[in-house]
Figure 1: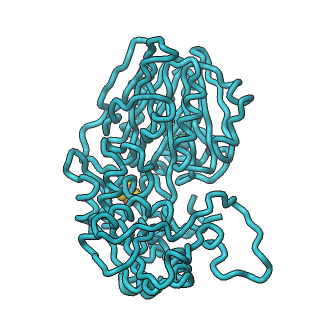
Figure 2 (figure 1 turned 30 degrees about the horizontal axis):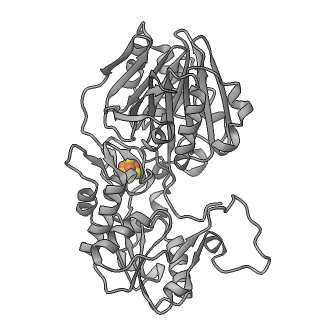
Figure 3 (figure 1 turned 90 degrees about the vertical axis):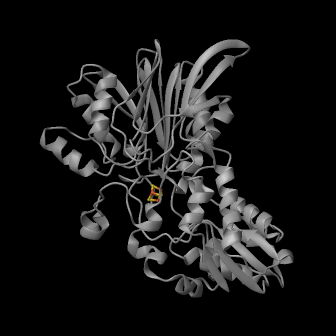
Length: 475
Ligand code: SF4
């Protein structure tokens, strides 16, 4: 059930090297990264000789029972939690992908989206490669297997030079863990360390999409894997190489606006800092006379805290979220207006009645949900509803690992801000400016971002399949 009109998160990856309970650390890491994908999850472990895997559809806590984990023993592990952005939502496409190749067994877990996957796949298929999945990640596996380079790290570097787009990868052979990011660093990937275990010294190296995974497993954040870097962790220690020439950094700014958890450090910057600053920037750019600042939970909460602090208008939880809404529900036969949204969000009448409300959210994608939420707030007696969005209008789809609707469905690509205001039924509507967004996320302070979904200017060459192919022939 999708009642939230949101961009969907992409995927979360985790890797563990040298820990007696590597599979459990991978499981806990995935649990912390569950917000990045809820369709399927998988863990592959290694006992130093062979790889053991388990993948299934569903949530991490449901898939990995104690019995399942007991069959994944080893000291190395990779984990992946998936929301499909390329390839169908099916077990077949769940990751990590494991293959036996002429370079031994390899497991690969990928966050991102390859922009030249169809082209490379077509070429590989003409050369005789047989694909098991329709996920773009499998292209990388075939390129590694076919590489003429002699060593596995060199074959990986060779493969990564042949793909384009967004990839934060963790990979594993029976005795090594590898981590790599695309040359533009679209998606995050952090490296951490655990140096003590039960009072004894140890040297466990971990990787994860977000540092919130480290907090749960007691790892310390060391640094990010750098754009264009391949890190190899093996019995001889840690080695690093840059497999690609430098490209301008284009890290996804939407990680700071929405995807990443506020308790994570992403691209070397605390998400909480950015998100609160988004609210402060909004309050400076688009002030309004009002009585309460109310977030759309959970995504609008931190920006609303910033807006309230900067404007001096009190922050109130005027919408309560029901966290226990399942994927299916039974609707009464006499249909209830806005049932889907009401099931998830309920307005607090005592806080809203007779009030002028500043309603804070992080995006308007199609506009349908915002319209229903504004109606809910008015229905609870609010006198005025002023909507503030903590990023610029979303006018273009993402090709770098985020599930977005096509341009035709993005309301801001087709309507002016005034038309959107009228559609959602707010008294006023304002989006944060692009400059305000970049300032809030620390652009220039050693980070430079992709903001293509707000500008339509992509950092790489893009062929929009939606625009040129009918739906029937799209993958
Ligand atoms: Fe992130 Fe938008 Fe760029 Fe996609 S297009 S990588 S969502 S900023």
